[in-house]
Image 1 (spheres, helix red, strand yellow):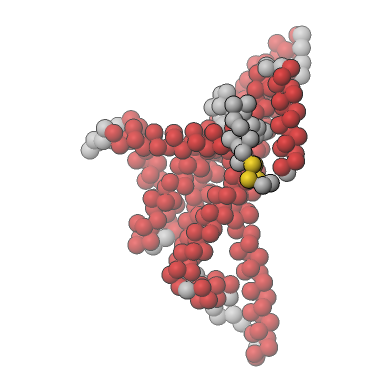
Image 2: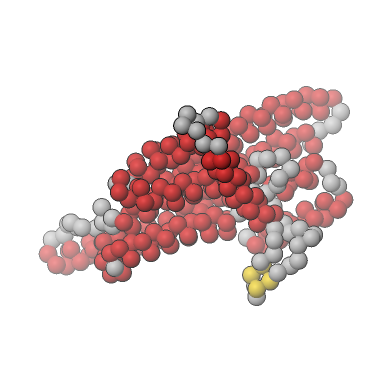
Length: 283
C-alpha cells in the first residue's frame, strides 16, 4: 500500500507541475504527499517526514482545542451559541454512547476520554471536507490503525491491571458455563471457543481501523467522481453537466458530513464497548 501511495504521490506531483487546476488540487483529498518545505526525515525504513496527513491531524487537534476554549471562555448558566452546541454534543456522547454501555461509576471515569475520541475523530473526518484543505487523515489506513491499536491496547492494559494477566485473558477468551459431556467434550468445546475468541480479539483493532478508513475513502472518491464529470465534457454538454454535477456534489457533501459524524459515533461507541469489556471480562 505504501508503494501505491508513493506512486500516486509521484504522479500527482508530475501532474501538479504541469497543471495547477482545481481538479489536480482536489486529488490531494485522496493522496498523502510531502510538502516542498518539509525535509525528508527517515528513521531506517520509517518515513517521519511531515505530510499533508500530519498537518491536517495538527489542524484537527487545534480546532478541537479552539472549539472548547471558545465554548468555555464565556460560560453562562443559560448556554447560548457555541456553548449550547458543545453542551448538546457532550450530552449526546454521555447519554447515547458512554452511559448506554457502562455502569454509572465506570462512565464517570471514562466519559472524558470517550468524548475526546469522539470530537477528535469527528474533526479528523471533517477537516478534509473543507475546500482547499486537502487530505482527510482518517482516509489513511495507518492513521486509523494507530487509533484502533491505541484504543484496543488501552483496553487490554486496563483489564490486565484490574484483574491480573491470567485472570483477564481467561475470562476474556473462555466464556463461563460452556456445555460439554464429560472432560473430553468440555475440553473440545473450550478449545473451540478459545480459538474463536482469539480471532475475535485480533479482529477488533483491524475492523475498527478498516471501517473508518474505508468509509472516509469512499466518501471522497464519490465526491471527486461528481466533480470529475465537469472535466470530462466540453462544449454544449458542459452547460448541462455543470449544474447536474454541482447538485450531486452538494447533496453528497451533506451526506459526507453525516457519514463523518456517524463514523465518529461508531468509533467512540466501539471504544466504549472494548473498554467496558476489559473492565468486566466474561460478561
